[in-house]
Length: 280
Ligand code: SF4
Image 1 (tube, rainbow, N blue to C red):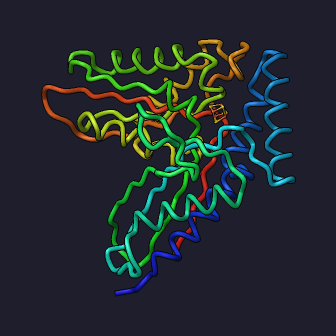
Image 2: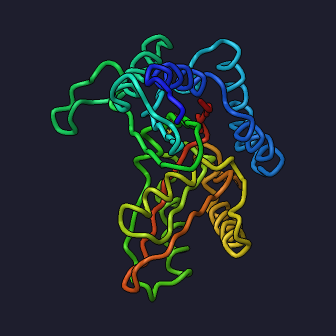
């Protein structure tokens, strides 16, 4: 059994939330570069250039690339041979978020209660997701997710008879309804199957995949490409000003489900896809 002190987790989270907000990972940069070659509208190309300038400047100056520095999503892959010591893990993660957002002068966007709406002034609570996996390591993945794109996400319990065509229609309509509000070009995370909550989790976790990496199942990879083509036909374009690149990628994750159900969740991510990871 390998011991890891929860303070190490807190320090890692504090570092990752800052790095995520200051510097885009190569997979996102590569996707935006590819979009430059695919975008046909002059206004779309101009917006993509501004997006490139913005993230380059953010990385150089160590300033946030967007005013909305996001809700901190913290995904842990916890090796079952790891013994966490030193206190409560969730408390440590929230300590790390508070430290990172305070030291990085990142905007505090989180509230104590959805109706009372008092700012917690340290960007907690974090959204914490824990998977127990084989091994003696702890992988920490962070995604600082903007509120605008999250707000345009949707979930629907379709009748099984809707099939792939019904699921596809719902997904494409969700992106059409998002229009400019989710700050395209987007990464569209889709979860199909499971149940009500699992489909949402699948959609969220699909965003952890490196942008544009395909689903390992060739049939689902083909459906991802079909969705991407349909979405890019919408003409929403970069920042919603029209163009041929509305989405950079569509990631679909699936699992089995009940005979009565066809849950479909769409979790939309903006072009400021701020993710980082570390292994302890
Ligand atoms: S949706 Fe993304 S790019 Fe748009 S304001 Fe929110 S964080 Fe920033």
